[in-house]
Image 1 (cartoon, rainbow, N blue to C red):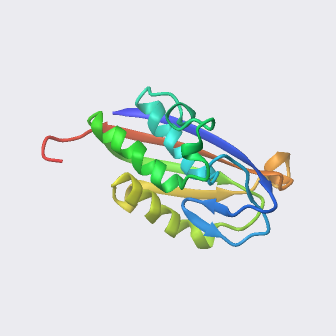
Image 2 (image 1 turned 90 degrees about the vertical axis):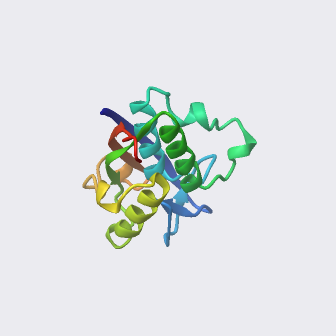
Image 3 (image 1 turned 120 degrees about the vertical axis):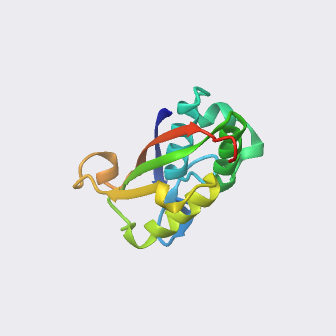
Length: 161
């Protein structure tokens, strides 16, 4: 088994969609970034790539490349899963936390989990997503941005998998 940790943060801005965990969430602001800026999926991808000792998503999907401009992070997550599989690993489990003062994410958590499980080709029971606020402290608490932390365990694939 190998363990990885990922962290990502994006600024909230007007004129962008808010996409978290592959879910389009109705809100007056969205996350600013080169891709769809899905902070949750970015943290999860970084955790997996870290467990594989392959750096971070910026190395695999550089923001200097027009190929990834506006990219769907669920597609990128599937590509990271393919790299993981190629290296002989599969997901043991993923545990992630989104830090956002608003909007409330509870109604979307199960859809996020299903999206992540599908992209990683694992069971939904292997994916945990939580959301919390920072009690109006810091950049997430003031509504300036949203952050996410993720940890994962990857394990060697069995011969029959």
